[in-house]
Image (cartoon, rainbow, N blue to C red; front, side, top):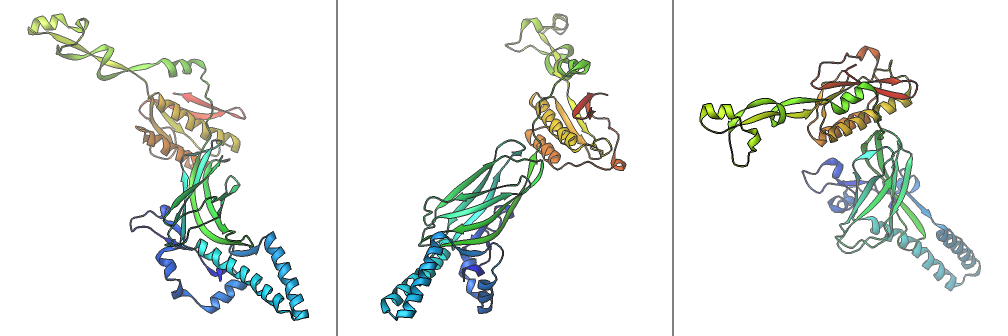
Length: 386
């Protein structure tokens, strides 16, 4: 009977996002299981259970089966009633184990919660959140099989404490993504050894999430005349500040430095006037990435390109010198907040080389233009204004 139970999805509210919905066997959908029950489905479910929905004996369970077989043969040959009673008790323990295992899973719900961000080589966390919606019985000794298919990583999380009625729990898996791209994370199965450990009950699930793995960070080295311009060059910005160019005049206010008083204008207007100079701001840069397959013929060099473009964008944003980022053939994206940088890293996570006919020349963008090209067989070079 246990092998015929399929996964049931129970949203907690009408406005709940699909990726935050609870899964499991419980709630109102569980209370209506009898509407879909059929003996035909029960028999076929026992003979040919669905994938990952299995009931298998453990080592103690195998020993119990051997003992049952021996006692059964002895009872049949001798006709001893005590042996028949012992056989009945042992068989009842197996049946009771299966029934209690089903009640242990029923009413328990779970959901998969990857904790962003995910980045190559850095530790990422995937959480399984649990809740017990049963009204009487607690939940014990569950395990959860998790798989990260792109990184080829898997683990089994164990619920080691009792989950009381109405209680919640959180299990975490920390792993390091191995590759850039869209990482499918799947909750492959849920199992239970409760109560006696004779049977291993596994309930197959279809809970999965897809996350974007950002490229790894790399160290950038600056060299040549462009490096001096990159680090030192500045420009006058038309807003009040302490630059050298005169932006305008305004009335003197308490606290203004006497050195900023414009004496000639004050004498002409018969009131104190103060200079307002343009502020001197650092020059901003625009990143333009050409992903043409004819240029990036080596896969490892293209991976380094994505890492370099992502790391450089983060560094420039940290110093307040990043204006925009662009992939060739796409409209420029202005960078104003950290979310814009994360959007750029999401784009780099799934970026692939494009055919030569989709290649576009670098447009005119605000700020100094930074372009990328191969440097030898392994390196990447970012050129400032050519």
